Length: 409
Ligand SMILES: Cc1cc2nc3c(=O)[nH]c(=O)nc-3n(C[C@H](O)[C@H](O)[C@H](O)COP(=O)(O)OP(=O)(O)OC[C@H]3O[C@@H](n4cnc5c(N)ncnc54)[C@H](O)[C@@H]3O)c2cc1C
Image 1 (cartoon, rainbow, N blue to C red):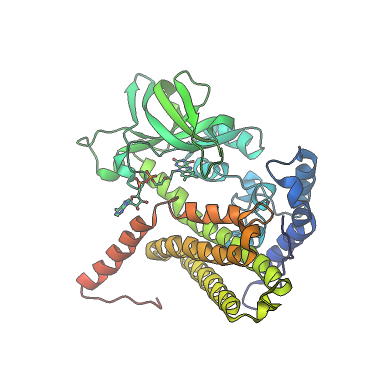
Image 2: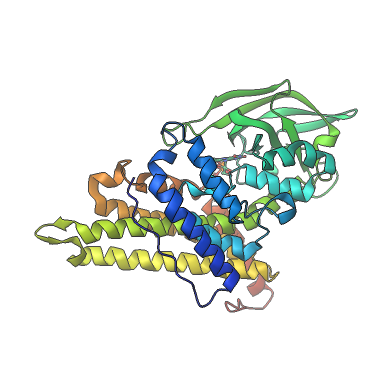
């Protein structure tokens, strides 16, 4: 895999604490992960010992699990610290699990901390944090639009002290390896009591429960990523497996996604940064048509456009993170970065692939994997169109109320 080096200097606009986190993260990425990327690939021979060694160093340096509070064994770094750490960490596509952040476990852990009872935490959260068990998140259904969370048809009905779950989900990532699924269920009929937001509940389902049937793993971009289609056939679990109060499922899903989008965007920024460095390495070393690539104006245009894409994506994301951190309503900002950053990511990787020619679409560089990832991000966590609607609604509401939009607020 094409490596190059990661350059992280202290920023005069950041606090000493955040600068230090970025430097220590960068040291581990540079010294331990980048030189070993070929050994960390999924298709490489067993790299358990190497992973263990890197994880020990991450823990010793206090950089383990930035998404978790200190009392749960995490960094307790706060929202902005985590965001800034992610852009450095994500320079290598192998970093996240080595820093204790594994999707979808990290999102499930966050939900369990917020909504779980003491018993649920003991049974599911603590072993998940210790890495003894894996989990999955089962919300999207093949026959309903995942972009409309109110359309879910998987039903949980009460039978004495049990929930009985019936329905079909798909794209439940990691289900084959999971000990439990957090399943989004309809617990109130359309015409039932409560508002539209109060009809869903998230329920913990052990994957060895009778009726939890994995039908197949759906390949994505020609690869098997363990995205499973699951038939829930009269799955019975105790009512104590429900997360939070009945009807809180929609809010819990929002909690999971809202702030998480900032972290995903900073991950994308880190990957764009890598793609840019990889592109520059080619530009500096390749001769084409009688001259260095770096002297060609088309290529200089690529450099400038990618610089602008990365810096604007990054600043938008940081601005959004600062607003969330300040307790300001940042719904429009979150939707804006959810659209703008994956699109910028796709453009930056696309240009890097172009300068590499055939090598760019081969697995000799990390670019082809990044390209698939960037494209997929435009669908995950709400497709672009849904986020555009959110922004337009928020803006129109203000103008209809006789106000205008203050971009500086
Ligand atoms: C690799 C991968 C991993 C995933 N992992 C998980 C997981 O672990 N758990 C899980 O539950 N789900 C997972 N998903 C599913 C993902 O969350 C959904 O794909 C996403 O929410 C979109 O839902 P959908 O695919 O049903 O598309 P739909 O909701 O059917 O949308 C399809 C398209 O319709 C258009 N559209 C939708 N709404 C509007 C609108 N209002 N106006 C105009 N156009 C619109 C958009 O172009 C959109 O892209 C995963 C998906 C992928 C690709």
